[in-house]
Amino acid sequence: MVVDFVYRPIITPAKDLFVFRPGYVSHDSARLHIRYSDGGNLELRYKELVPKASLLYQNTGSDDTSIDFANNSPWESAGEFGPPTEDTDYTSTTALLNLQPATRYLVELHSRESTLHTQTVLLGSVEFKTSPLPHQPARLRFGTGSCIKPNFPYRPSWTHDIYGFASMLDHSDSLDLIMFMGDFIYADVPLYFGPETEDYRRLYRQVYAAQSSRRLLRKVPMLHVYDDHEIKNNWHDQDQPPMGSAMTAYNEYNGLPNPPPAVSGASYYNFTYGNIAFYAWDTRRYRTRWETPNTDSGEATTSDDEHTMLGQEQKQHFIQWLHDVNHTAAVKFVISSVPVTAGWSNFDSSQDTWRGYPTERAEILNLTQHIPNLFYLSGDRHEMAAVELPSGNIEFSTSPVSQFTFPFVGKFKKDIGGEHTIHYRRPGHVKYGILDVDTESDPDTPRITYSLYTTDIHHGKRPAWVYEAKGAHWR
Image (cartoon, rainbow, N blue to C red; front, side, top):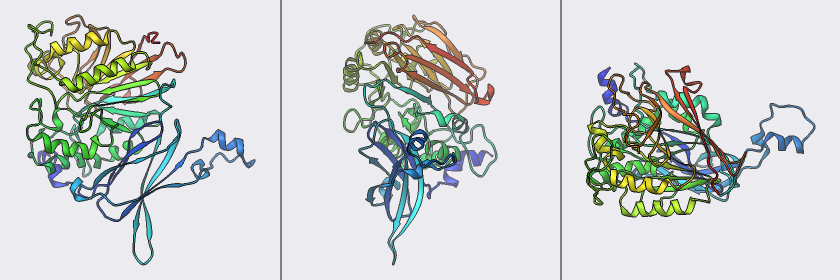
């Protein structure tokens, strides 16, 4: 059992893994992530999935509701391109362009093998729906969480699975996207295999090879930020090795399918879904060593501008984004791989979360307190907390999607340093959130609902806890 759990990435390195999944989907384009190692040119074909009502309106007079509506729109080809190469671990990210907003598409990936007669082989298919036009009122339903480890808790099986993804599948038909907030792999748990790029690639292949990963990610676009375990625990050494190897593997599998970076070569980014805006921080690459916060309040004992988690360039870009979306987006989400709340207060948290950077944290909260309907989303701590921060903004911190938790050790201090704890939950190897955002019903006052799911309650079929935030007039 121990040998299987620890050494599975070495025993079964998934060298022949095939991946075809949607990444970032905008109102007029879609990024598609591919891993394919068998050679031969590839071709993307796509078509609109015509709604049932549209077809009945045109129709034939038939009342046959079993008709396959996908077959009633023509296929288009996005062209032929060469296969991924060994240099990128046989991965590539390509894009479909000139799509229609708020439209569902079916996309097929074909391999074209040149023999005496060119043969076309269907490798896989995905579905997705493009987002509404920018600034347009919208309804968005998306999942959030972080931290996964295949086959935890351990079960004897030839094919390891990710139980949190299996639970998310129960809700996948209604999800527009999933925001995964770091620790997609554990490079150093339970054993650090080494600093080479292949050591990291093996772990990504192990996650993508899981049955629930394949099923979930062909149906729902997943966007990513990375955290420490994609590199090493509590990483704060910026671009020192093994950062380069770790980021090569991260970009091949998770980074390049994300929205375009805010700055060339960076991993932080922002995007919109209608009039709902997102900003995803990179909380690892630019951070310096932490400050020493006041033990009780989480506030800085002395002001120190040299300690930073975001770095100056990212922070200034974020401040400009706040200015841009303040009165152009009805709802705003800021994605942080580590919690903004100071509630997690043990030694590790006091260094690794925003609690360890109280000066910069106070600077940012002082800005976001003036931004209506801005929420923070985070993961990392293998526990869940909903907290009203000193700024009045609410943070939903949710993890693990599929990992260990801390059943006996209390680590969270409620109502600390001007915060108000709305809800806290420690137990559960599977915990994730689903947010429903409605800016259509009342364009001036949006509705934001957070639902916590855990397989410990209702087997993850129904929410364990629901919170409806009070949307504010934002124009």
